Length: 263
Image 1 (cartoon, helix red, strand yellow):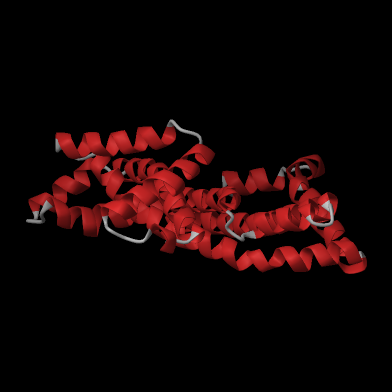
Image 2: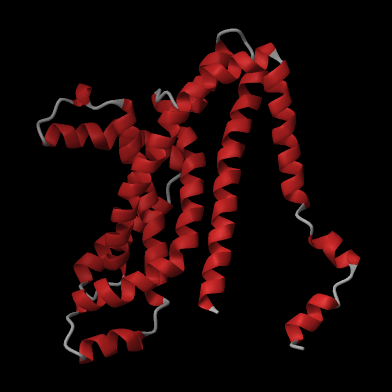
């Protein structure tokens, strides 16, 4: 009998009680409670029907912004570890600047200052740029800086000997990075990327300040009209918690699968 099997058999009921996911039970209890309110409470149901129209906007904004942020983060992460002094310092400046300013301030600055100025330089009609597009641009730039550090850490976690081995068989640095280093790094950082996706989903609520009709803006509009603050914001909490809980459970399952495959 192995040591692990012995430890598993030696577990007491008290250990099982302590390890039970009570946090999950509490959250599910709240979701069930809200589900009952949405079913039997006409006011809560009306709020839900109004707020749910913003779900598609929230998900579309998050998915689009995160996809762009991954590309920005990858290039910024590679620039962060570049041997070229100019490229490395540009990447570091971008990362540290974004990380040093509050997210809400950055959203205002990027959406209402940087995007219009960029449109003027490109001779584009500023009025044609929708609030949704500005929100996506802002979230992409902000999270690109955070993802850059994740990519940097993932690349640096790969032993340097693998790059040296790839170079010894005739690969260029670019080929070694593309075919040897990055696939392993992305696998290692995929849980961290998942956590940042969940964080962006929650931070997407901030784009409501740009009048983007996401679920947060829908809840604000419903609450401000008949003064139904309780119904509006409890429904909003229910929707965000449902989405993040599902994503968190999927991420935990994926992390367990990675650990099992690594054995």
